[in-house]
Image 1: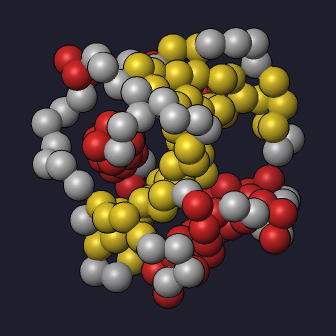
Image 2: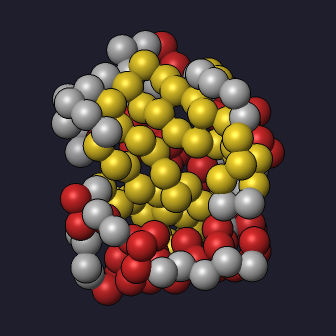
Image 3: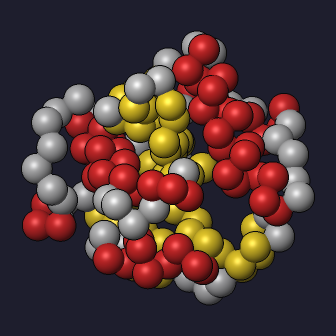
Length: 153
């Protein structure tokens, strides 16, 4: 079940462990306090089944109309099963319900086709972030034709 996770809770701590294991450790990196700065003001989402974190993402407000999707991670065993798609659509609903009109993100180049299939478009040149090639992408949330019907959160 996808849910909003309050900052500082036990589930939030488990999300941090999941993010470190799936996003940082494979690159030989660790997570430190600087990586987590400002997270108390961000929205944390997790897909949890039977107490196990399957996926996470964070939404960081950029300005009054734009929110950044970051720290997206899906357990390797769950990839290709719609878990990531459902996380992004849920996040878009959360963002829209809070008055945001646009979602931006930095996608690993390997994940670019995934986001393009969800209606995101490249908005700038590729760059290196945390040692990996990324592309900046965005999607305007007023295009409901690409968004699966989800309940308001």
